[in-house]
Image 1 (spheres, rainbow, N blue to C red):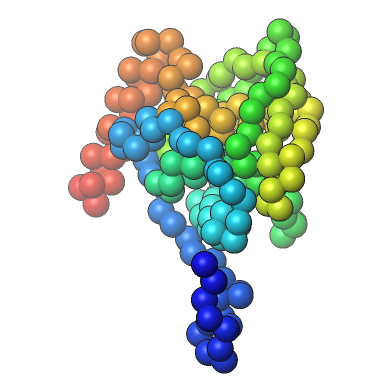
Image 2 (cartoon, rainbow, N blue to C red; image 1 turned 180 degrees about the horizontal axis):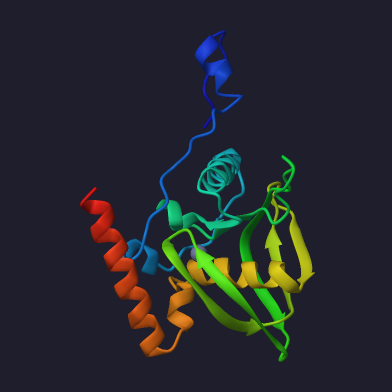
Length: 190
Ligand SMILES: [Zn+2]
């Protein structure tokens, strides 16, 4: 349903939606374990969410963010791997799916806005082919390697409620979780 058309300056402003920075949820918040659901229709509300996610990601100095990290259980990822010299290359992937993954693997040191202060080496398929919807709702396909492949897989894990530390050995994960809890205690203590 559309709003009735009338000359209302506030309604006009709605055509230029203000961006909103939203706080990033930090582990062990149980919401991060949510399996996100498909976006049924890519509409203005979806695009507004993408804009908010990008703003929140830039604000937090991230290179990738999944919607659940700001508390929205929708299958949306944003990313910008080319931030330098004040330049941006914002990307959005809606309902992304991996179509193919190489047997060859690559190891990157990963970090996560929802798992602050922790970095660890994670092994994943080196190359993937994925499909997704863009901001206009058009189906796109891409082949990725390097950081793009890693980042896509890391963010797509979030859509299944999986954190990168879940890929670590039991021992390494418990060390990471202890570190996380210690950082949280320090933060809570101010
Ligand atoms: Zn993450």
